[in-house]
Image 1 (cartoon, rainbow, N blue to C red):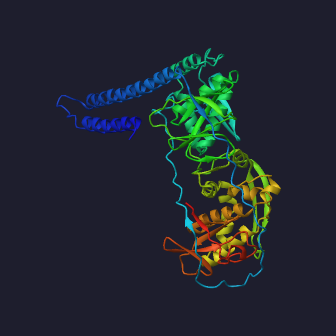
Image 2 (cartoon, rainbow, N blue to C red):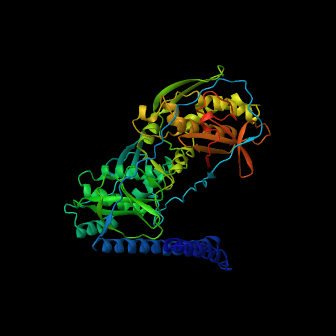
Image 3 (cartoon, one colour):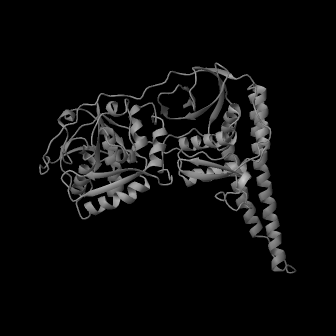
Length: 510
């Protein structure tokens, strides 16, 4: 338990004791109800004030220690060269047309290994609790000069606008940065932080999206001072509980690094204590860093636990014709705001194992647009069917997306979120497998493992109603039947010839 958690635990314990103590205050015979009530309220108010004062003192100490530390000599670091996303040559997809062919029964497939399912990392929380202004009529009300308006992927946000006064960092020396930190800590930034966290929760932003939102807020608030933008962003991220660091590059420009346990591709980084420190903007290899550690700080997670809730803006309209199911007419219009957001997300894997890159996209929940436009049609199409027959329908849906290589379309490796597969004209085997795996989990509620072969990604599903046929993996005591969304137009339980007798890795999905 770290210092901040210990402090919060003690406050929670004291709060419980305090409330119990207040609750057993006896009512004297000469008390009327109102007097008795006031005694209780007074006791609780004093306790709450003491706790709040402790929080303030705790935060003030962190800010003072941070400002003092900024004056020290910053430590030299060498960033490793950027790592490129893993690229595997993709073989041409195989094709077959046996819609009525029944796969062999009980054909078990051997596999090399299975990755551990990724854990959702705890979300960072502010250093101390921040509360919005109780007298504020609401952040969505435009009240003029005391509000800051920021548009983030179609969402208009009205935020408390702090009075920045004359704070600036013309000369980014250690001393001036330290003084700027002290000046920021003297402002009442709690209403702004509370507003930003409320927007993070309202929009269901992942950590990366929240950091980029704060960056836009900061750039809007102090557009005149790049150094102050960097310090203010670091200040806000720090006070929101994230592990970030200030550094100089070899031209003495100021930058912010953020810590993550993920591997982010195409950017330089260095590793320390299990975290990779990554610059939010392009940076040279030699840096000097201020390594002040804040109690309870957490690295950014690259996982997306909820689909971001951006306002709808009509993107591309798609009419999908499903092979062997002419009765299925699926029309879908994507949310351009969500598609634009996904296009900013960096290529990453959850660890140094490159196969965890697919977990990020595959475990991201489907958008409201998918749930409202696509899933009702799919649920109606599989109603009353066995799990095997229902999977046949969903597999044919996934196989009906036009295929092309990433190199041809993007000039690089690019893995799609489900919504991107429904938005863009072409997708490859990884995208097909991810799209299929999300449909299966959401529409049928069945367990899924992605299946990685050399140069190919497929999927497998745990069929539990006894209707399984064909090739399967025995994993965790369950039969995961192979379902290849790029084997045009094979059935559930059929393995492409290029993948037969090839050892695979199973990647369990959440």
